[in-house]
Length: 195
Image (cartoon, rainbow, N blue to C red; front, side, top):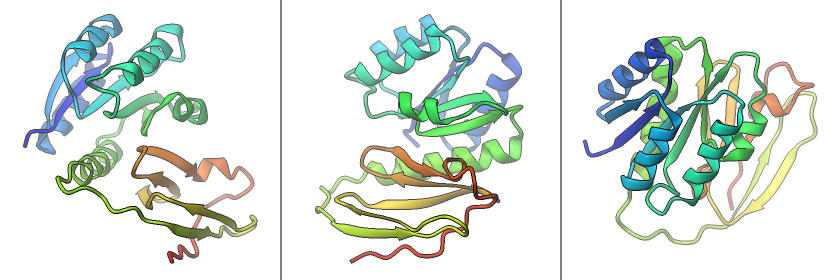
């Protein structure tokens, strides 16, 4: 397959696991332990996916900003690796499309990267898209029903039990995650109606 991924991760064990799983999924993976080297590669080459070991510091935030300004990688899928106790909302706000939690387990990492790869494949369609207008209603036990009219198709992706995201396929951004509903222990979608 011709999908390419860049893994920017100083932890050699995590980088080895990520590149191994990306290779198993048919993606050519390149690794660099340095954010500065990662930025050089982002400026000079195109990658379909970029995995960043996010450390909540200035260099990680600069990487996000420069990536989204890069002509070659502006639309690349950005996957952030964060600590298990870290609130992912700010990382999504910086432009991440997927989150992997440390410590990385091969099973969860494989499931998430497979979902990301499948999304990248769908985004590579050669035919132009027709505009779609839909109304989505999502209900969660113990929370008010959410309703939104969109001009983009949204899709519910399940990563592992208890973790859900509503994902905007045009912008490749998570619109809502189960963790956004802090008063709901387990988010379960009840309906998704399209007109």
